[in-house]
View 1 (cartoon, rainbow, N blue to C red):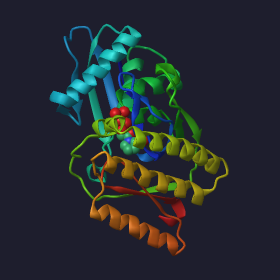
View 2 (tube, helix red, strand yellow):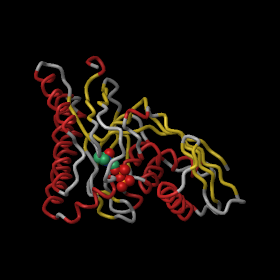
View 3 (cartoon, rainbow, N blue to C red):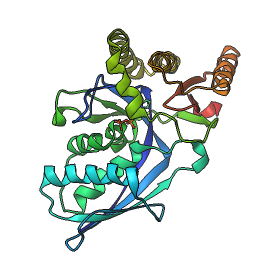
View 4 (tube, helix red, strand yellow):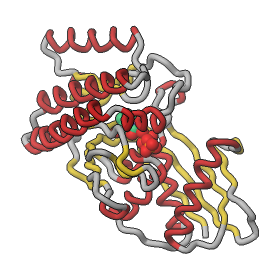
Length: 290
Ligand code: 2P0
């Protein structure tokens, strides 16, 4: 009743921002991401009939408080869905350089979903595993796959899952580290603010649906400049929307890196920026330009 699983961090090129169902963690829109080769989480789940509650260790440090509660509530959902009668000891290791600013719930909940079901000898197919990871953190639904993945928004638990789209092996992502401090407003709380702004929400949903369809076409056509352009303008729109709801993640340094990226692009090197719920800027390019 023990299993170790590994899942990699992903970065969205068409972002998930906002939920249509908080309890089941269903997103407002579909999204599309690139899973990174280098950064991952490895998690061991060991069920033990003698335990009276879960125990969580991250990088060998026992975790209590809010972070523990989030994980044990998640494990309660897994137990309920799959009739697992035991609590577990969970050991999780993050193979993400601390300075990369990528500490991510995407790899964490994908690895946990896999380990928690395999440890009880359950063989979920990838779609179901993706739905289960989504219950822990939306972006985790996409970390079940390598390369490019799409997360279909769906309309209930089992229809909201991610699927592998393709591998574009010549893509590269450069992380520009700007700020290592924890974010002041976590992404779950920040994205839920959108529900108080119906006009912004409508703008976001319509634009994201367009970006999602355009991005899929650009990927099918293997048109890197178009992929980068869509990713960049979509990330900028997300940060405009976030700003309008009273949260700001980007700093002067973020804007400097964005300006520099545009400058380098104007000199003929295909580089495009994207940012998530933090100040760090990630630059999408091709391996030969790194
Ligand atoms: C994404 N982000 O698509 C977007 C872009 C951040 C900006 O998914 O509430 O930690 O746990 O489902 O997955 C971060 O949000 O949110 C995120 P929950 P999650 O990657």
